[in-house]
Length: 254
Image 1 (spheres, rainbow, N blue to C red):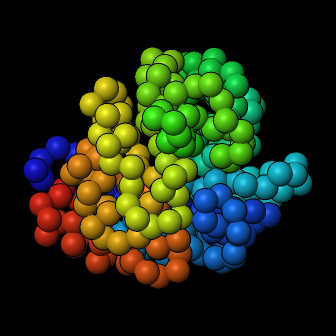
Image 2 (image 1 turned 90 degrees about the horizontal axis):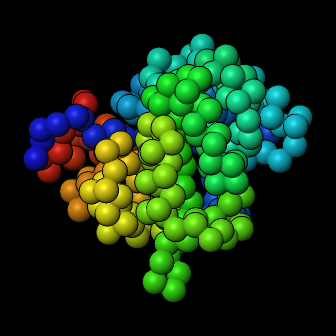
């Protein structure tokens, strides 16, 4: 059980106009503090990686986010991924130039799948994370655009496979049904992704207690688990979580 690569714990910080915010099911945002300070605290607490998502709509906000990325890169020594509002290779170049380790693409890749090929060709697969927001409805997992507001005709599994074939290095799957409600991750869908893909799968949406992380790794076969509010509001400490997971026979870096 404890063999293989260490399972990763990844706090996710949604950034709006330079501040960290957190909502439930993609709405009702409340402030959770400075993204650089928070990231630093997580890094010191033993987080393996961080994800910063820019949820600002304006171009002015985009500039602020690039500044945040530059500050994060100076202060934090664990890998971090940035996403949100990445539409073309220039956006990728700008954020990698500011110091990000990986780039997460979501809506833009669904609209133009060739973006994944472009990023992988230019910067390598290890830089490209394909984030997928999907909702289980009428017996199938439907992919959504624009922060979970617009349904598409794409299905989670077909799109994840295509993303891998185009060169994505990881899949970050958020279950919109589970997001922010703290009843556990979508483990059946995660396990199916893990079985069919040859690249790492990151679980997102649903963490409420330590057992949920354990289940994502064991039942969901995920390579990494991402969470936001349980970390931001101090409900779960990363150190305690990792000690608990190790006690459950899961290989984590302490």
